[in-house]
Image 1 (cartoon, rainbow, N blue to C red):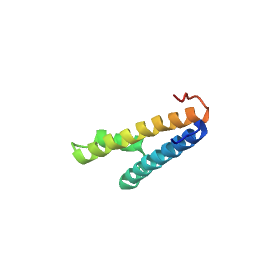
Image 2: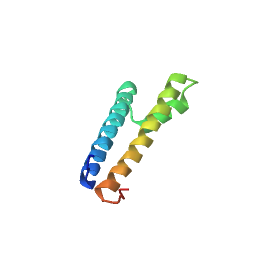
Image 3: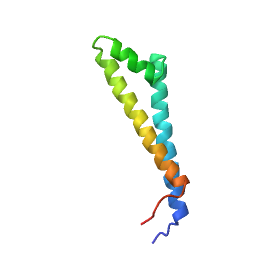
Length: 87
């Protein structure tokens, strides 16, 4: 039997969340470099352009990255605030 403490579980979960955040930030940075603008500026470019499906796909991906990053950040804040319950 393996015994794991609450502190070890929290440390593992923090590392997992930090890894996810890093991947999401890298994905967002890749899109920023590709289009040389921020997400907000890119939204304007997509809305002002003709139907460019590659840009729409990138916009959907970029917005999903930002949404996921926000969610992961919130989870990390909860763990840092010790607002969790281990069952």
